[in-house]
Amino acid sequence: MTDRQEVAGNKTMVNVVLPSHILSRIPQLQPGQVALVGAGPGDPGLLTLNALMLIQQADVLVCDRLVSDEIAALKPAKAELINAGKSCKEHVLTQQETNEVLVKKAKEGKRVVRLKGGDPYIFGRGGEEVEFLMDYQIESIVVPGITAASGCSAYAGFPLTHRDFAQSVTFATGHIKHDGKLELDWSALASDDRTVVFYMGLNNAQLICDNLQAQGRSADTPVGLIERGTTLQQRTVFTTLSQLPQAIKDNGLKPPTMMVVGEVVSIAQKNEKKAAQNAEQRNEKSALAQA
Ligand code: SAH
Image 1 (cartoon, rainbow, N blue to C red):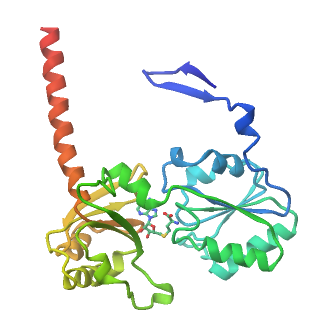
Image 2 (cartoon, helix red, strand yellow):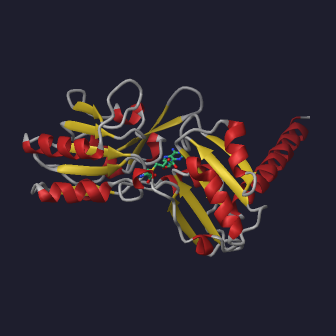
Image 3 (spheres, rainbow, N blue to C red):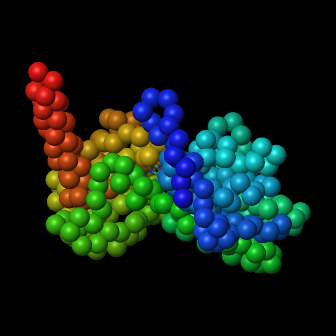
């Protein structure tokens, strides 16, 4: 049930009125409970309905470094905002401190929303937080979010499992806890029919590039790097496996950046060319029609 309303320009605003059978399924956060909510990769339009509705129920919103200000601003005006991971000049909370804040606020009887970039259970430490809350007898719910791999790839035009090129996709970390040595199953990741998405991979790009090639992945394998994907500042850089570390340096890529390794990356470039040709043809047609 929607209510369409024309606004300035030719944009159409849709005021969504949810039917009661959907509304009744939106989780209701009780005092003293914590909701771990995935906020998606950046674009506020990628929040789920449950995420939005829970943010609006919060007494306290505990945000990740990856959650944008515009999403945090969806909280009720009187709700407290705690930035758990803002680097700048502010103190960055350790994971232990964050866990403790969640427990403290819940014990005070607050409705706590812990908002995390992407999906809480994909490289998001959501599992650790739920375990900690359980140890303190605090009830929690988890709301999935669109993880960076799917959000950023869709916006950059990489169909992760296009069946002509990839029969599987792997989400891999490029960073190990406490800066440990990155040891992955390189021979499995090197198979040609697989797309590999690296989270947090910038600092280990050389190691990723060397190990995949050592296990037989071709030096020419296309690699797409997406910086701040799905936000207004999204930037995509195309390179190849052997050129990966240099491309990161040359383009000054900074976190959050996602690396996609595999033939599916080349589809974005092909489609971009086709889209440009199609637009040209449409322009020619409309020019002829007006003549
Ligand atoms: N839980 C998050 C991942 C957190 S790990 C999720 O499900 O998406 C942090 C890493 O995720 C970053 O280093 C980067 O590799 C990736 N990432 C998250 N958001 C991103 C974005 N908007 N653009 C590009 N990469 C992103």
